[in-house]
Amino acid sequence: MKISKGTDYALHSLLYLISNGDNQPVTVKRLSDVLNVSVTYLSKILTQLVKAGVIKSASGAKGGYYLVNNWETVRIYDIITAIDGHRSMIEDSFNHGPECKVQSILNSAEDEMTKSLKSKTLKDLM
Image 1: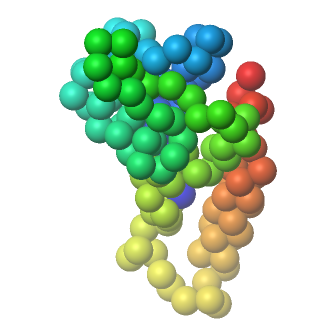
Image 2 (image 1 turned 180 degrees about the horizontal axis):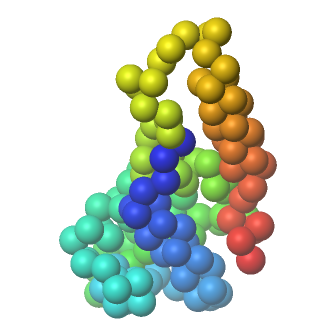
């Protein structure tokens, strides 16, 4: 599982929304200023989080992004896959077959990381 800069921005956007506390919509402009990232790039990331059901959005003058009601149960793994998909950290060209000890160890490590990320939620980041 590869973790991109987009996932980093997604997680930090979510932390900001959590710290906002009152669950009032936060504009993409505000988030982009806080994270020092372009509005365009962050908008794409936030749209992916909305599609995944991690956050909600509201249009209009008082619009923005806010947390879903059950944000505490959102798994870190689900945030990563919403942004990066289910990409492996092991290159596709690195497939030497099941007898390869190196590949076996790396696959096992990736499985453990996936298991750990599936057991952690946004609440664990608080």
